[in-house]
Length: 576
Image (cartoon, rainbow, N blue to C red; front, side, top):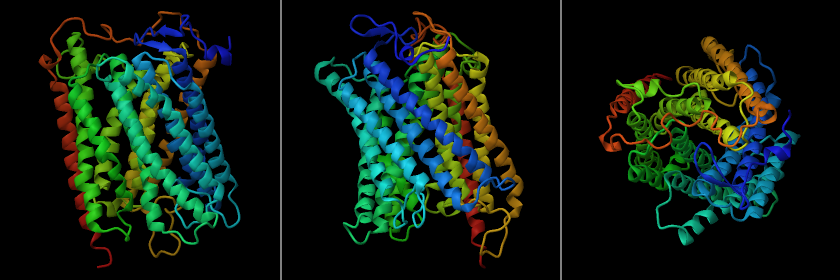
């Protein structure tokens, strides 16, 4: 039987609109649940749109095929970037705020009309951005994600971007109202860690959104002629508060999801609430300063400013990431060892529910984000090393490692979780659902590494559709990069197919999946339940497996750090 729209937004609520989740045990109100579904479904639609253009972009960058010409490449690249890097993620992040706020706290979602107004405004802004990208013609150019002035970008694009950002702000108000009500009239207890993480995410979002509104408003008043000239350096500095800040929202939302899903599916515990909260607070003060690494090659900014923001200040954010990198796997190890699940160094991990796509997507997200996205972010964020990364394909590889692999995998796991716990639908195929995280993580991981190597070892530039055979106007060729470019092309296609499989399983489960009855946990609950019954206290549990993994991570980081400095030394022979 095909599920109708009304059935997707209906559940077995009591007279007050609450129901008890069979997996988490949370008391969930229909207002919170239905808005999570609304924003989540919209995010998946944006993913479909962005995924379509992922095909055309990848098949053009893979020069063996060269699908579209230079004239249309940037239009397709812009559609791909805005829909996958912004719309898919931001709509999901509003849904995460509603999960971390009213759902975890067991409250109604206040100001539901405001939430709907935020959704309508965000959709209007997203449609406007897509329209003005696709219809830019004549002297106008399709705005890339950077959307720098004084490029002749359509006026409507600036207005639509402002509308979208204002809509995201409106949509976040009910979450903030939930937190205010909880602290004003709720218990005196501290906020649960997941709620606290969502709250810090919302503050980072406000910082980023205000910067974005300022940047796009500056561009808009210039485009309509209210001011005659525009300072492109000031615009770039303002822009990166949203250009990179939006990715910091992704980071905090993703880590919040890590804590949530490793607990409710893997049985993780929190090793130290205070330490994990301190890491979130470090992000509050330092994470957005890392946006300065996009301006390393900008001559308008002083070396001292660049060094402070990308080295000393950014280390505060890197230290916070290191804390989470230990705390989350340590919590998983401690929780499983408390239940007597798995002995030896890594038995707690090998005995975990790897066939569960919610769990595997979360763990692959943690591993790939840390080893690929996190390490490359620190490397390319250094003033000296940035010269080997700036505007090369390696930069594209870095943000695919953070967003396309790290954040997207975590959000895929959350989508699967929502399908079974909120939409109450079983997977149309458990086997295909289990395959998705492995297929996507493997294919996108290799494609990402290929992009990084193409940029670092061959200097392949970003944003240019054809470079392997020759670079117009240059006296040298980088045709030696062709085999690695073909490797990228093959695995990019496989990653797209994995994304298609995810969408087919997700949408197919919503429409055709069997209805899960009340009390059916769909096999999501961890062995031994959510809370360990007896056993050692958490600080008495052996966590040597996590310690060993952290040593492996640090060794990997040191090797790559030294290697990048070696490659930097090789640059000075150019022009000698």
